[in-house]
Length: 336
Image (cartoon, rainbow, N blue to C red; front, side, top):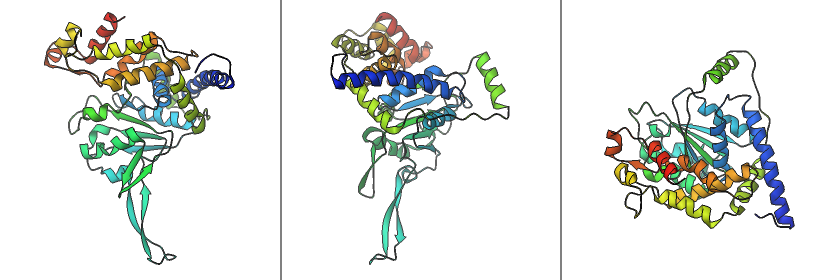
């Protein structure tokens, strides 16, 4: 995407302007139901437009599920919720072949594939760490390839396809931590915090009255697909790409020139997919702000949600009370 003359460029510029308007409308509409959390909503929209997936981590009762379902409604997207439990099977997610009777067929019976809840534009994987690894792995192909395989046949998922998974950070008994391979499929790891005092007062007031809010549609699936293509066409300078790659490489303790604190506190750093998502996130943030190319500030704005689930701290960090966020914030300070 450039600002040069030409019908294609003019259409891209108009699309950026429409996206800015849509972003404001999204906040206006979702604020009818959700109080606060504007930054989380923005990051979810960034993930959607960048064709990524999000992992939301927060204690129960912070309206994570309501936030996700409301976003799918105002974007006019189909929505399914999967409640992950220890007895959930892969077929409960993907679907299964069922033998059905057909009187109009010579054979009389035929296996018919019945689609599972993964066949939706927005899929909420609620408490994804409460199901065994075999079932967690059923989401891998869907998240990476936007297709699933069952009974020897491959089925394409509906586009756009967007997975939002939730985890409860305080209750780990009976859970199955997501393996690094699956964590890496999530573009962002978002931390949903408690609301402020004023926001909580507004939440309690609005949810204990008889008034029920409804949201209006903002964008359809076709427009979202067009905007996803637009994000890919956004140009980015070599300087910004180098900055993102250097930030990611600085998380690897075995890398030459990595900071001393990285070697002291990090056991395993982020891979190249983190650099890719950092640039895609920066591109999307720039477009949402009405700019035609991202800068280093856009990379910095999305580097924490991109890296916090890809960087593994070691025993030294745990013993000294140093969290992943502490390490990443220090990295941003030194690379500022």
